Length: 427
Image 1: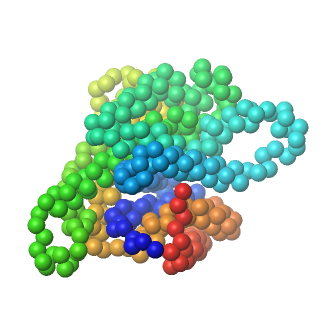
Image 2 (image 1 turned 45 degrees about the horizontal axis):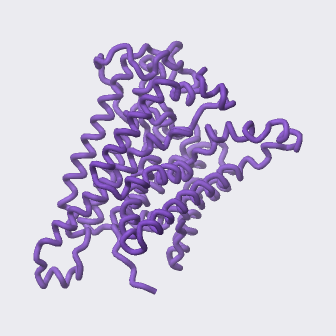
Image 3 (image 1 turned 90 degrees about the vertical axis):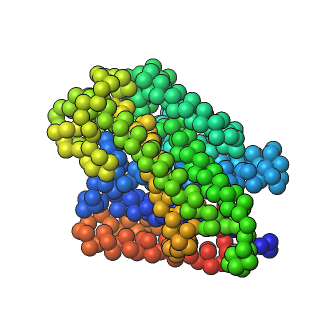
């Protein structure tokens, strides 16, 4: 075996944290005793909303890292082909996992024949298809032409995708995602189905966290290059035979921290535009009971009349505004949601840069989950379904905590077993 290449420990730790957070919200979020912040609401930014952008951020970081290395080692054509193949593999795996739980959708052959091919696919292509792995696969292929390019190219691509997403939401896409009357649904054939996590055009929005992840990689590499220019003393060479990420990460820490704060403030600032819309009637905090604004993207006024509730705090029913583009909304993946979630992902990663690259501290659970994230993703769904079948949604807190501990323990045991035997699932 070839000697293992140095890993960016902060990325492994961050990815492991994100997988662990996914396990928390996916299992606990549906229980009656769970706090609302562990669920998706699409009316404010909850902790559950941090997970998918976190995955995209890590993917963008790793995608640039891997692609640049492969271009240098195997050539541009082979490198790009391997990434496309990986993206298609993720899409296929996600689709299989999603539809494995709905294998009895058509109980009779006549039902399938009557529905037709597009009738059978229209609803899933608007909703069920867009699970985490499929969205990551599609978005990774979408950003592939620019992810190895310059900062200017990637930034221009990000701005263009964001602008196009805003424009399409204004023209028809916001209504499409909320199953309101629009020209696309007339041809799509799923007018009563709401979209999920950005839907068919979500890759335009999810471009942002992936590109920002690639910028974070650049920041880490610039720190490495700055460190390599310094002369190493004999004592330093004894401590680390080659310049490592750990030696230069404090140089990058403040850059990452400042940009994370800028992104989060920008996202929150834009979310305050949502306060210009009328309050929903009757007052409610349930998305299905909140009316959609007549003009979701163009607010009544562009002046911020009052600050919105801060992230992670659910607005009271009496202050809930009509559904509009300026809410931090994960269903549509609005611009305020994207900016704040990308900044939050960057802030969390910055913490792991300080903890792991500078402080040389690793958390075992995060290491195990982060270095084998795909295996952990697949296993957590299987184990969660098995354990969750013994935990009704109205279970008391002690039983929820007990089954959650069993669920985490079994998942970790499987992934840790793979780690001990050097088995890592890659696409």
